[in-house]
Image (cartoon, rainbow, N blue to C red; front, side, top):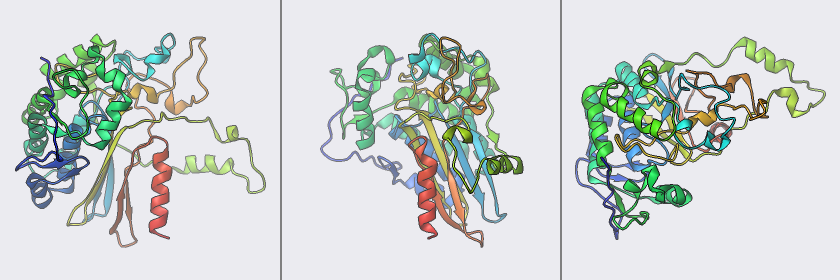
Length: 389
């Protein structure tokens, strides 16, 4: 079933009545206040990510994945939930050798999405409000429509040729009834996505990873040349990550540093080139009890794999590009490293860096994150350094 935007011009920013009022990049709703007052910081983060997936579909959504850092003030502990995408079981390192242009677009560029399973895992451990309550604002936005803001309008212009190509299914949402691409301050509705959100709200994460939604999503991705299977979705699990620092890794880095001389850059390891992407968004939450959540979600480049699943309304990710590929002659690219080697079920290397900074008393000083690919970590480091200078 096709979904249509029924786009219309607006002379002022789009505003929708209670319980949901959304402006691009910022939630101003009674529902949001209820989540912040009665729910946990994780509840607020989940509700916000779901809404942003409707408001900023070029950057994040159910077809992607995320990293979420959660800080519990009462226990002084933190955990990171890794809900990033995984390579399908049918993936191989040479799968892009003959068609390297498919590395970043189309069904074959889609990795197994982790967004919903990760949100479910976060809610099971940290949530206080009912799971279904967290979906209500996003469902209403998708049903009643949301305003095309500056960021979405820019992304649409950037991907104009892709959006207007009917076979990608994006024009069903982002074009008006005359077939022209929507512009800033016009309204876009997502009825098919609203149905998917409602099904997940009532049926939990399993409603996305099994049953009709999974079957239809796999079918749509495969029709675009993808290799994802229903088994891939069934197998997907979000993970709590281990500490990224280790004595062995620190020692390895230390041995490469010499205070008396410099080396060629190759001495320090393979050059790692991350794609310059726009499909990423971030949410920071600080609760009144001192708990904090920093979550960065992504579908890869603008509009992910650059098509939309007509059955589910989901825009899949393009995160197979996070792995290094073999060239047609069998050689590996210059940015190859063991951490980026493509293997079935593996998560790609990422620059996502959801960060929470504490003072010596365990109080939160900063909850930050960002988008921009490889520049994320350095930008966040600069901001953190400025705060403590």
